[in-house]
Image (cartoon, rainbow, N blue to C red; front, side, top):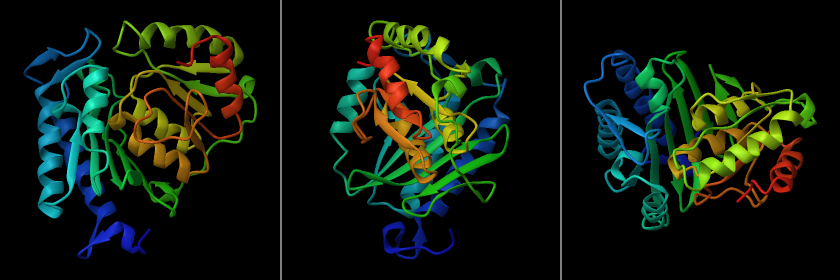
Length: 284
């Protein structure tokens, strides 16, 4: 990944290097705060939490990014009002920016609050609406998942490849329990009921970005969830695609920054997973 092209460098500064540095610094700081946060607030629902650590992590990342690239745009979860409508509006207002950094400062805040070691920092850079850099950092395992458009995806410096399972019944698949109890959660529960009997097993571990990274690294065969936001998916989408996988919405249309209902997989089980959700009316 040392050879850079013009798409990933401005003024000699590598976008990927800055993203990795930001994720690493934020992740290490978050780790020191585990079990030591001072305030806990409820955002959209009792399942949608925020601490001063989320806000501090986002501030740290934003300051670092804008120090290197002061003219770039920035979309972070904690800078947006809670709820799906506000998330959609925030993206629509900024998605056409030439360079847009899309950041989830802690994906898996509920896990962080409870000391459950499954959360990450997610940082993506989109160029004219297309994700060109994606970094997901798990500070508890010190795993840095990195993708650059057209250059593959890596963890521990080794190239990642999606898994080879070619049927749902042989697959380990993940999903989530959305914070939106009115629309997304009932739909996702319907999907769980439909998919669980068809797969080898199902995991719900509370971080969409890490689930996507695990699809990219071959640890999961697939992942779906209803009602996510751009900061949950942007970095992970590139990780999956650059590892040979497929990312679409639940209707099978290719991923873009506006996708909220997502299916990501090794590609082999994509159609089968989408069909299972469609058959259960759990796809939109």
